[in-house]
Length: 505
Ligand code: MCA
Ligand code: AMP
Image (cartoon, rainbow, N blue to C red; front, side, top):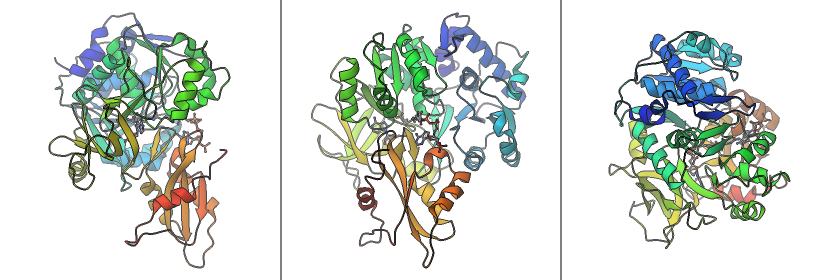
């Protein structure tokens, strides 16, 4: 095949008048119209001087046009680099410079702030707004509606997704066509997606979950998506009766359970609810079944690997587990110190290998070597076990990571920023249980000697540089941090101490 990802996901719909996207306002986008738009966009990128292998960074609202940019990248061999819309310009600067993006697409409201960043990094800047207008759109007007698909091998790169690290520096996970395609095919079959499916997609599309899991599967299966710009409760309630399936982070499901309108009758046309990105509480699982009669299907994935495991479609969906390794995925649990494989039931590091596993971190060979073994196993940083029946359970994290409402927050990144502020001697950032977000961020601060810290000043300083979802929702000032005999900060002690700060939140 000339371009495996494009041909299987987009190219085969040439001329098809079937509906791909259904918007909340009733507007629909057919497969054919989508494809023609993507072709026009591919011409704009090519005219802007982008060649196969170049990066295109996008920080734009969720819209059909956003997805068409993704399709255009796949068709023209350009690497698609989506960015969280919550990132501040300071955060975006790093991604643009690290990736060497040649073109940055942003909302026109961010143009003035991002223009100098693009200019410093020799990148062009164009705008594409939520309503589809912008300088990019203007350039696309009148462009041909077909584009000669660029040849790609399955091993060629299709996307970069940045994932923060325990050192505080984000790493660009390089995903190939084969990574995306193999995983989407496995999931389509495992979850029995067909052209009859209407998937409610209220997830953001700058992460694996909403983009590759939800969108790629729908495209492969030939179904359509109810494409909501975000998780808005009224819009979700209005859309549910028309959907056959839904994917979400646990916060979606706890919020639905809090809404009295969410009942059995509303979801009588649904065949499948899928949860992932963060642990689903067994309690949520139970309450959901009680309310709707549906057992949520929980699965487990990562930016670097797409999806690794899933509870079965037909068999027993066990609460508190993430199911079996997907077909084609090897999963083992190893001793974190020696790398030796452990026996079933023993807790250790989860490692995975398969066509889903990424190619490495962009321009970070050392980091890649630390996490991706020569034999192809990727060290996930998640601690877990495989039980006697083959179900995988995640019991903790070997990496210092907080997951808030499905978004990852790496404490190190925030600690580095706080420690650089005047009056702060040191800090420790931890996650504490939160009823809406699962976990939320707490910053524990130690002031310099003879200094009184105003936590509101710390919060103000962080607001300028850090995306909203990463900002601590609780600050505590202490005299010193608990340390072990080696001098290492005991975060587990802090987690216990601050476990109740969000009680009632
Ligand atoms: C928004 N805010 C948050 C979060 N989201 N704070 C903490 N954690 C969050 N997740 C803050 C904003 O900064 C803002 O703060 C205020 O909440 C309102 O913002 P808004 O956007 O209106 O919030 P929301 O609509 O209530 O959003 C919550 C949400 C959203 C719906 C749970 O965060 C969401 O869609 N999460 C899904 C994330 C996701 O797709 N993850 C997949 C990653 P202020 O008022 O102070 O300005 S992929 C992955 O993990 C792997 C591969 C996998 O397995 O899937
Ligand atoms: P990301 O860096 O956004 O790819 O997040 C991946 C991380 O999310 C994994 O390493 C896990 O720690 C976590 N994760 C994803 N799905 C689940 C799940 N079903 N249960 C528990 N943790 C999960």
